[in-house]
Image (cartoon, rainbow, N blue to C red):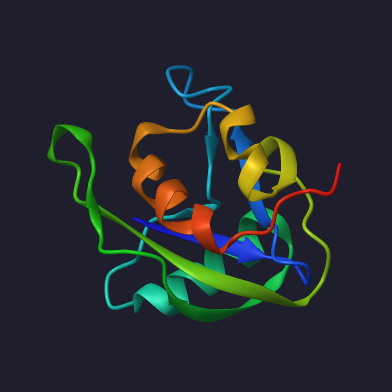
Length: 129
């Protein structure tokens, strides 16, 4: 599995609220999905962002080491990316939010995404209040 930590021009990160499956509905994640056979992680990330959000992204670098998914369902690899073309639209998610470092705890994350949230936190800006 692959996820995109998409950063805007200020440095906030995009999070999506899951619609399904029922057990994960309402939890937040970095957009992404499955890597198809013969597909690189980077190509999968670009494809998933286009399919899920309607945007073209440029993959920058890996956020942290891959994390094992629960129940032996493989690993999750999360990469920083930036939007090259388009504006994200929530089609596979019920809501999208741009989050700063001080807002990461305002949503309930998918457990597999938590190590990547913590790895990103020091590099994200805080919202001016």
